[in-house]
Every structure is written in C-alpha cells, then in structure tokens.
Image 1 (cartoon, rainbow, N blue to C red):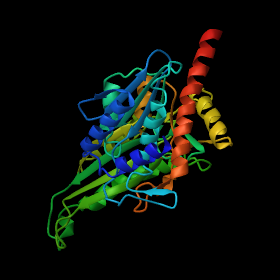
Image 2 (cartoon, helix red, strand yellow):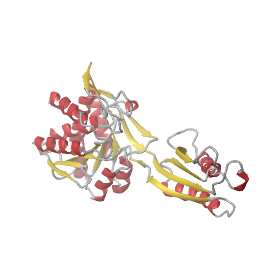
Image 3 (cartoon, one colour):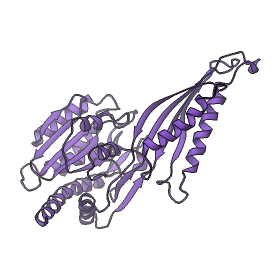
Length: 371
C-alpha cells in the first residue's frame, strides 16, 4: 500500500493545477476515490468529496487541490518527491485520502469525509461552497504543511482593502494647481499604519494587529501630477480582536478624510474579510492528534498559532466545531521553486491521519457513555 501511496502522490503532482485550473485533478481524484471504495460527489465548483462510513463521529479531512502558479518538474530522488504542491498541499490531501481508504471495509470509525477543494490559494471558493452546502461534521482537519510534529490550532484573521484616491490631474510643472493623489493616498495609509502600531503586542506577533501595503498603482506619465492612486492593504487580525471591529475603526479613520472638503475623493473596497479563529487546545480533536503523533513519531507535538490565514478560519467560524490544520512537509518550502516532501514524512502523515480517525471514534463514544 505504501508503494501505491507514493505513486498516487506522483500522479497528483504531475497534474498542473494552479487556482482556477483544478478540474483535471478533480476528475483524477474522483476516479481514484471511487476505485478505493468511497462514495464520491463533485460539486458545482469542482470540489471532489469522498465519503465512507456512517454514524458518529463525523470527521472532515480537507485539503486543497490548487497550487500557486509555476510549473516544477516532478521527480523522485534520495527519499524525496519534488514538485509544485508537494508541500503545499497535495501531500496532505493525498495522505488524507490514503488514510481514510484504510477504513473502507471497517465499521468502527463513524463517518469520514475527504474533501479536495479548489481555490484555497485564491479567494477560498472551495471551502465557502462546503460551508454554503452546510456540510455536517463534528470535527475537521485541514491539510496544510504544519510540519509532522506540529499542530496548528490558530490563525489570524485578514482584511484586504483597496483604497483609491482621486484628484484633478495637471502638468507636473504646476503642482500647486492640484493635489498629488499618491501623496494623499499615503497620508490616509499613514493614519491606518499608526492605528495598527497602537494595537501591537510587543510580546506576541500572533496577538498583534499588523498592516502592510501589498500593491500600489498610481500615475500615468513622468511629467503629469498623479490624478489617481490605488493602494491595496493587507491587515492581519489577532484572535482577541475581530475583523468587524477593526474594519469599523479603519472606516472611522477614512471617513474623517472623506468628510474634509479640502481633501481629495477617497473610495474604499473590501477585497477579503476573514475572521480569526483558534480552536480549544483541550478539545477531543487536539487530544486525538497529540496521541496519534506520540504513537507514530514517539514525541509530543507542539501546538502552534500562525500569523497567516487559512481555510480553517471560515469553516471554524461557520460551524463552531473543533478545527485544526495539520499536515506533513516543511512549510518554509511552500511556494518556492524547490518544493519537496520527504517520502518517510508523507507516509508517517498517512499513519497519523489514520490513527486520529480511530482515536476520535474512541474518545467520542467514551464521552457518550459517560453522559
């Protein structure tokens, strides 16, 4: 079975599937899941969803099929598999599929749903479709490269804002005739930056509000005073705050400029708003994963909280259930030109996911008997 698991991962990696181009991989995974005994559905956004078992507990193992753009040749050498998505995050998704398949002919595990979703690297259309369809589960694990001996229990939230400043465009030789849209956009940005700095926790990056500019577009020619400037911002929200409150605070800052008749026109659009999420470290899901890693790897895993944002944010906020992110692979290799996964770590990941399924069944029914 290990040989098949490695060959399946190679097969998955050879299908180029950047965000928006996941259909071929969705078809392949649907075929492989059916061959392994899953009941399979492909939804309207091309998420592929395989189900085995029934009853309780119901466990979702969710990984994403898409990758960032960039073709990387797939090869196996010295116990490693190279290829785009080998870390982020086709190894996690394939390991989840292989782990669940080992329960196809068993009855003592409840229900397991393996979902390969689209667009995680984009706007999260895949996980949002799962939420829209009101998928019913008791626990969820999202497959991302946490490192084989680390469990991600929390992610910060995110707001993306596009702030556009518009002025009258004039010749650069007469700058007194108008206002510089780039300079005025930066004036607004500076006020937002100062607001974020005031929310900084010097002892914890995870607990700090952070803000940065990720894109800027302004000006049309070297001798024309800029009449339009658009700044795209990325604001990360700690779990002790909420996107709603931070957005209200920032809009309060911007409205002061909008109400100033001497200031240029300011427009704001929201690109993304994802609330922060952290699961209870004492939940049955976290305990089941700790026990599984102890059993397979022989050491107690670290519980970590990341300053990024993932699919588990939206899912955990929507259903209010225990959700973690866990998967094999070195996260520092994600999105790089030399992504690779250690075959031994990938195979350990399969065993750990498998053990988690067994552990959750035991924990769930022990708790039920004690109620």
